[in-house]
Length: 190
Image (cartoon, rainbow, N blue to C red):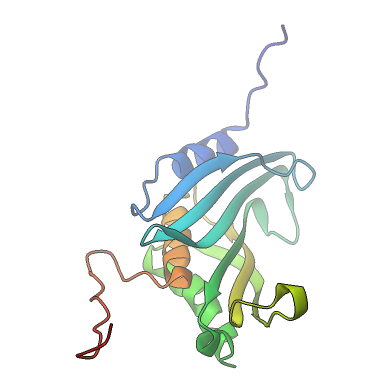
């Protein structure tokens, strides 16, 4: 049996920091297989966001490590994310949504005091209407946020907490400690 391969200390410390985080209960985190061709070392988490028992947003966060460094990353570590959520059609069709979605990411990282550089990404909004054999459900809207950034410092816990905040924002969850009020039906409504 071959001896276990020793992980670089930087990568091992970064993974330990990610594993140490507990997100809010509506966000279910799971370690998943990481892509193997993007960097010599990789680690990945998958998340599902539940609201009233339904999954309303999903995401993936991948940690990449190249001990030799990477010029475009401006460092040896890189975090890559993909987050998607279904939205109400009114919100999904708002021309300001991409800017708001990007702000959800940067504000979430900043609120957790996650230090980073070389951040970039895309925000995509889509509207879908079904026809023919697929007709039935009303129009649906989605948002997809794809981004990557280089974390500064050894502690990645603030980055994961920021990512969880991003997931909560895309899912429309109220801030922690705030309870959403039930929707009130007009008198006489069934």
